[in-house]
Amino acid sequence: MKRGHTVLEYKQKLRKLKAVRPDICISTDLIIGFPGETDQDFVATMNLVADVGFDQSFSFIYSRRPGTPAASLPDEVPHAVKQQRLELLQQRLNGQARAISERMVGSRQRVLVERPAKRNPRQLAGRTDNNRWVNFDGPAENPMALIGSFVDVTVTEAMPNSLRGRMIADGAL
Image (cartoon, rainbow, N blue to C red; front, side):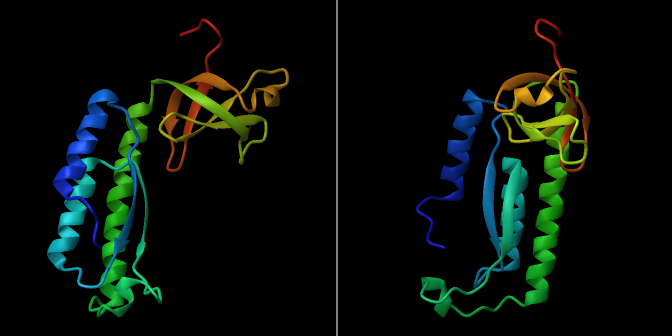
């Protein structure tokens, strides 16, 4: 795809970032089934995903776009193979995200409160520094006043697509 860097250069930059901030959230976009993608290319992608430990990804199957340089390339990867590869990739990414969430249980997180929780409007929902949604009970009086504010939350449970937590009162551990 004519990227201006190698995988080695990319990984070196990520190592530098992680040295400064070990808990940094790394996200990526991945295209599966780009024209000419071989089995070895896909294995290399899966290895990179595992090596880097991506926290999140927008991954999708390649589709031809008129006017792009790739539009004239022969698309030799069968759709069924692309679909199978995408499913394998997403399973790995979901497993990595789940492991990251599970490691957060018991930790104290700074959360930007964004809205009422979707499933329980009496609760609040916000994002952690690594972009995880966490749902938690707010104060008994006027919890919605916290929207737009930062609060500290102890993560109590990792769910498939979010975290549950308990707000920490000022000065509490």
